[in-house]
Amino acid sequence: MTTRIVVTGTDTGIGKTVFSAGLAGLLDGFYWKPVQSGLDEETDSEAVERLAGLPSGRVLPEAHRLKSPLSPHRSAEIDGVSIEAADLAYPVLPTPLVIEGAGGLMVPINRQTRFIDIFAEWRLPVILCARTELGTINHTLLSIEALRARSIPLIGIAFIGEEVADTQRTITEFGAVRQLGRLPHLVPLTRETLRKAMFAGFDLAKIAGGE
Ligand SMILES: Nc1ncnc2c1ncn2[C@@H]1O[C@H](COP(=O)(O)OP(=O)(O)OP(=O)(O)O)[C@@H](O)[C@H]1O
Ligand SMILES: C[C@H](N)[C@H](N)CCCCCC(=O)O
Ligand SMILES: [Mg+2]
Image 1 (tube, rainbow, N blue to C red):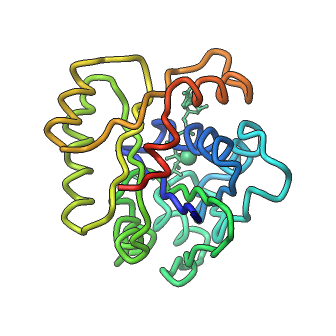
Image 2: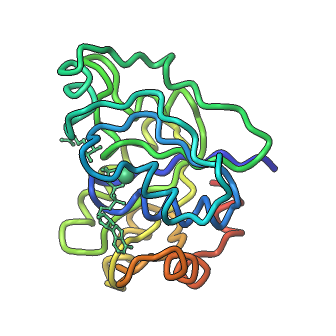
């Protein structure tokens, strides 16, 4: 089965890229970051190259690489370019493909379109990355509601951070959503520690099984 999975999250900086690297490695697939904003530090694609342990060529080139580490719609304006939904048509490959958004669901790619609108068009199954720390119940349930309102298939939640059992239970119960697993904060964060943590923390059958 060709698995195309969108990895999104409740916010920026919560661990979507690290989780995507681990997932692409587990699936032995490809990774694609359609829009990268911020080029001065390691990009998401470079991080996945470093962490996923995939053969070369499996990290696909971004459709847009924008200089400023801002919301893509603004970063594009500063660079004098415009991101159109058509630019973000995902590649059709015979192997698993992990596609990472930018920030959270409502992040705009231009002044009319947000990532969630693209995901609604794509209709691909989504994994929602969520923190476990205080504040995540609200952010996660709001994100789930937004996905459900647009009938975007939600495979489940990938928790990132230390275990907070009641928070994770509260989210899965109120959200009527599966907990796919949890990726702790890894020290050190390496290809090896990530692969080990993904095997230990996630059930691939749950993920590949779709919504
Ligand atoms: N499980 C983890 N263990 C250790 N460090 C982590 C983990 N997850 C994320 N980090 C670190 O936290 C920072 C943000 O993570 P990451 O880049 O994955 O966030 P993101 O959600 O992809 O952000 P963006 O919205 O910019 O794509 C990075 O420095 C990353 O190395
Ligand atoms: C720059 C950052 N690393 C991401 N690529 C983009 C995050 C956009 C967040 C927009 C917002 O929610 O305010
Ligand atoms: Mg990222």
